[in-house]
Amino acid sequence: MSEVEVEAGAKVITLDDYGTAIYFIEQGEAEVLTEGAEATQTLGPGDALGEIALLLTGERTATVVARTSMRLLSLSGQDFERLRPRVPELERSLRRLGLERAGR
Image 1 (cartoon, one colour):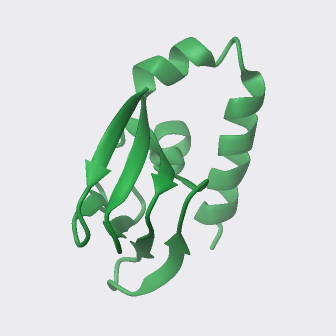
Image 2: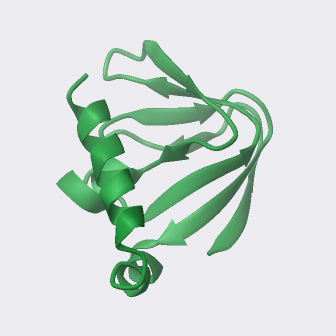
């Protein structure tokens, strides 16, 4: 896992990009934008993003833009694969979150 600093206004993930990591917000806020560029949700400390692409579709299903400066923890797909057998509840929780969000 690595730490990532993001400036306010920067894209964290972009719609239709290939997803290679899950991010966990340590500090700051971000807005989730749909295809029509409408903000549908605000994410903050403790929230995860990028789980749909990594676990379900392979592609990002929204664009996420930093609303404020942010500090994220990035878990690469490779690291996630190594963790899966040892922490199966992590995958279950993220998969459940991804299915809830994808159903919106």
